[in-house]
Image (cartoon, rainbow, N blue to C red):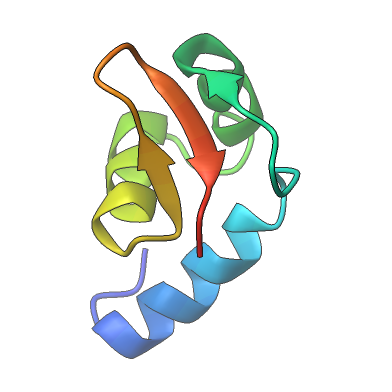
Length: 66
Protein backbone atom coordinates (compact mmCIF):
# COMPACT_ATOMS: atom_id res chain seq x y z
CA UNK A 1 0.00 0.00 0.00
CA UNK A 2 1.57 3.30 -1.05
CA UNK A 3 2.43 5.65 1.80
CA UNK A 4 1.75 8.77 -0.27
CA UNK A 5 -1.94 9.62 -0.27
CA UNK A 6 -2.01 10.56 -3.97
CA UNK A 7 -0.69 7.20 -5.07
CA UNK A 8 -2.85 5.36 -2.54
CA UNK A 9 -6.03 7.06 -3.82
CA UNK A 10 -5.16 6.13 -7.42
CA UNK A 11 -4.71 2.52 -6.38
CA UNK A 12 -7.89 2.53 -4.28
CA UNK A 13 -9.84 3.97 -7.20
CA UNK A 14 -8.78 0.96 -9.27
CA UNK A 15 -9.81 -1.39 -6.46
CA UNK A 16 -13.22 0.31 -6.20
CA UNK A 17 -13.85 -0.56 -9.85
CA UNK A 18 -14.26 -4.19 -8.74
CA UNK A 19 -17.65 -3.19 -7.31
CA UNK A 20 -20.68 -2.54 -9.50
CA UNK A 21 -22.06 0.97 -9.29
CA UNK A 22 -25.49 1.07 -7.63
CA UNK A 23 -25.22 -2.42 -6.14
CA UNK A 24 -25.16 -3.00 -2.38
CA UNK A 25 -22.84 -5.65 -0.93
CA UNK A 26 -22.84 -7.30 2.50
CA UNK A 27 -19.52 -7.08 4.34
CA UNK A 28 -18.74 -10.74 3.65
CA UNK A 29 -19.02 -10.20 -0.12
CA UNK A 30 -16.78 -7.13 0.08
CA UNK A 31 -14.19 -9.15 1.99
CA UNK A 32 -14.29 -11.94 -0.60
CA UNK A 33 -13.57 -9.43 -3.37
CA UNK A 34 -10.77 -7.70 -1.43
CA UNK A 35 -8.97 -10.76 0.02
CA UNK A 36 -7.19 -11.73 -3.22
CA UNK A 37 -6.06 -8.11 -3.73
CA UNK A 38 -4.38 -7.35 -0.41
CA UNK A 39 -3.30 -9.42 2.58
CA UNK A 40 -5.02 -7.15 5.12
CA UNK A 41 -8.39 -6.79 3.41
CA UNK A 42 -9.88 -5.05 6.48
CA UNK A 43 -7.42 -2.17 6.12
CA UNK A 44 -8.16 -1.98 2.41
CA UNK A 45 -11.90 -1.84 3.14
CA UNK A 46 -11.31 0.94 5.69
CA UNK A 47 -9.21 2.96 3.20
CA UNK A 48 -12.02 2.68 0.63
CA UNK A 49 -14.47 4.10 3.17
CA UNK A 50 -12.08 6.80 4.42
CA UNK A 51 -11.40 8.04 0.89
CA UNK A 52 -15.16 8.10 0.07
CA UNK A 53 -14.77 5.53 -2.69
CA UNK A 54 -17.24 3.28 -0.86
CA UNK A 55 -19.99 4.00 1.64
CA UNK A 56 -21.39 1.86 4.43
CA UNK A 57 -24.61 1.64 6.41
CA UNK A 58 -24.52 0.90 10.15
CA UNK A 59 -26.00 -2.50 9.27
CA UNK A 60 -22.96 -3.45 7.20
CA UNK A 61 -24.13 -2.84 3.61
CA UNK A 62 -21.48 -1.40 1.29
CA UNK A 63 -21.68 0.28 -2.11
CA UNK A 64 -19.34 2.10 -4.45
CA UNK A 65 -19.82 5.82 -3.95
CA UNK A 66 -16.78 7.52 -5.51
